[in-house]
Amino acid sequence: MWGCPDLAGTGKNQFHPIVHLPSEYWVLNLERPQSDWNQFYEYTIGRYDEDRKGMYTQPLFSGNRTVHVGLDIGAAAQTPIYMFEEGVVHSFADNDEDGSYGPTIITEHVLTIESKKQTIWLLHGHLSRESLAEVEVGMRLNKGDQLARMGEVYENGGWPPHVHLQLSLVEPQEPDLPGVVAAEHRHAALERYPDPRNILGNLY
Image (spheres, rainbow, N blue to C red):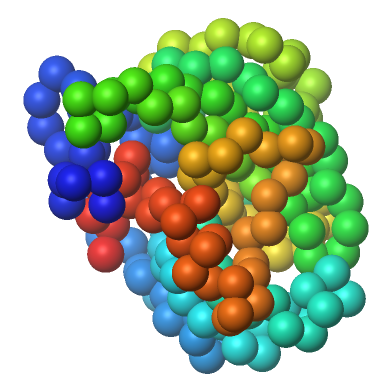
């Protein structure tokens, strides 16, 4: 964490929820593959820095990328996704390869972290295709504005409906980031892609 266990806590600098979660939701354990992510609750959380062996079988992952370096919030397709803080649309695309993010939007934000200004980027993956029709590169959005909606399985890369959220401290060169990395690249990836709970709060 950026020197604080819960940057989304109370106070005037509170971040807006990216997804409005109920008081109860299910924290998944995807270190063992599950066929039904929503078997217990309507809303689910997929953990950051989780080694999901056996889950990523598509050619995209080359058979060795298993460590998840984002955080997933699962809910019904068309669930709204909001801006956690003011920012601009950095880039967007439909990453339509099997197993990829499908419709993807990256936003850019300037935050004060440990008394210093820091530019960060946030990838939102597995969106609805209609979400891409509603944004433009450079579009400025306020905290709490609706950015997108979660996509259906047929359009989101083939996954149960959810949003993959991934922070980056390095500017993406395209509307994509490696959301899953090989174990030997884990340490470097965690430095580049910090824990999304920095903006989401302690969801688990």
